[in-house]
Image (cartoon, rainbow, N blue to C red; front, side):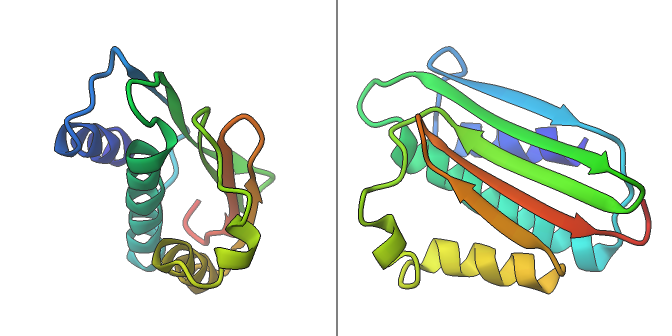
Length: 134
């Protein structure tokens, strides 16, 4: 219930209508220890906030999705994405300098995970990590 509550709160905070930007949440049940849950919550907060601020400029409509599921016995996958404008062309050069991506990379490292970023017809972040309490 945490992920739906957090994302709904972000939509409310940014005063975004669910008629303009759809929120698609697919979450499997998994218990996370506090050392993993807090960084995951911060990652979700940062990436959904970025989608709400930058992906749907003007009156552009679209979708934001958050998926969280178990892959294999111990691996967990967290996917956050949107079908908005995508990342700027110079994102790879600026990536090291932007506070948001630096924060996300640090949090992914904190949970011992890997981060994959795709930007085609929107942006999608895939975080893979292990958790002892799955």
